[in-house]
Image (tube, rainbow, N blue to C red):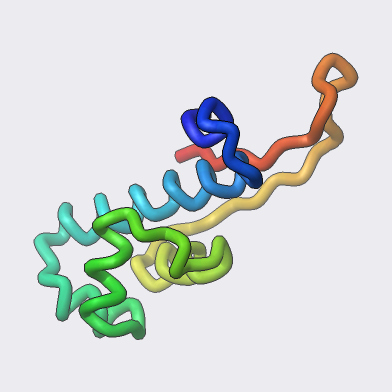
Length: 96
């Protein structure tokens, strides 16, 4: 986790947001959507889409990024499980 390597607080959350935003951006690009068309689909303004694709993720919550994926017809699955004893802390992860 690059955010952990940089010593940033909430590194797991930052990595999760980065992965979710990457998925959203990838879908927008794959569908050849303009930022204006993506904004209409996601229910936000074009400048906010620009923030998203440029990685300005401090402006977006995890919940909002999940909402974007749902708006883009993606299923989102959240799995909660007990952490292994071998690991000191629980963690937040996003997989695709």
